[in-house]
Amino acid sequence: MLTEVTTTSLINNNINGNGKLLLKRDVDALRSEIKNLAKEKNAVILAHIYQRLEVQDIADQVGDSLALSRFAANTNADIIVFCGVHFMAETAKLLNPKKTVLLPDLQSGCPMADMISVDDLRAFRAEHPGAPVVCYVNSSASVKAESDACCTSTNAVQVVKAFKEDEIIFVPDKGLAVWVQEQVPDKKIHIYDGFCPTHYQITPKDVFVMREKYPDAVVVAHPECDPEVWRLADFVGSTSQIYKFVTDYHKQQFIILSEQGLVARMQRDMQHKTIVTTFPLPLCPNMKYHKLETVLSGLKENKNKIEINSDIFESASQSIIRMFEITESNKTGNKNFWEGPKRQ
Ligand code: 13P
Ligand code: SF4
Image (cartoon, rainbow, N blue to C red; front, side, top):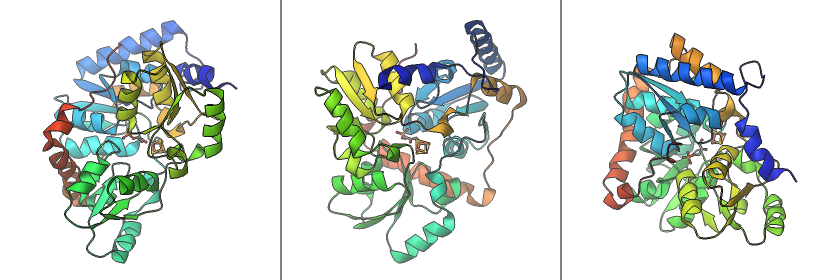
């Protein structure tokens, strides 16, 4: 079994645009060029925690979807370089209409977000008239524009509970939707058939194998996993909730049922703990497109600017603002807000 060794080494590789391994001196040179240019252009670099570690290391803010959206909403920078997937960069643009938002590699999409189009959503809504639509942030701006509120995995339960209606349409993630349904049993959630191919790669058998190998380990799952998988976990939570839980919990061994970038980051940040995942590694290839070289070229040339159709801009941003209104009005939730892992 290769699990815990390969997790860190795979993500730690500094690969250039041609797939070649970069030497430390090349990495250091790229890093300082990016940092200097970002300062000169008043740019801020945001990185999702599933990004390669070397990309996380040049970011001004690392975090999950919610932490990065909040950071994007409050930045004074002129340019936001978003090292995450396309819908995250769109969210940053929706919150900053006047700013330039760059996605270093445009291939970085999210297959789950692509599983629902506006037509799909309209057809699904027609089956459940009167039910408001809550869309997971992992969705396109046009789907957000057709939704009543957006949510992330951190606040999905809180957002659904905020609606007075007894029936809610939840799109596109069925893993998270089933999780929300269990936390909010007094409402009927109409669940769309979308899923995350990375988290769904983990099977119940993979979990049994790891439990046998680490019988004392605490099993922790992201709700994007298949419900048959997260039901086997001792703790279910979003990226930030997983990071906090593993940081604070007194046990030493953890089996993480989530993406490998998060696992690698926790392995580095919490070296006194044993943190492993399943095998084959649950890796989101879409998150790994951004590299130091593409960040640099994107910033140099203001390449891959995110633009959103003006017809949907206002309604799409409203669905995100609605999420903030719901979550920010809850002072307790706000106090516990995760700002991302500490800077190295
Ligand atoms: P969070 O960052 O909200 O936990 O979502 C995980 C994910 O799959 C991002 O695409
Ligand atoms: Fe999309 Fe899943 Fe990758 Fe997140 S991990 S970006 S949901 S495919």
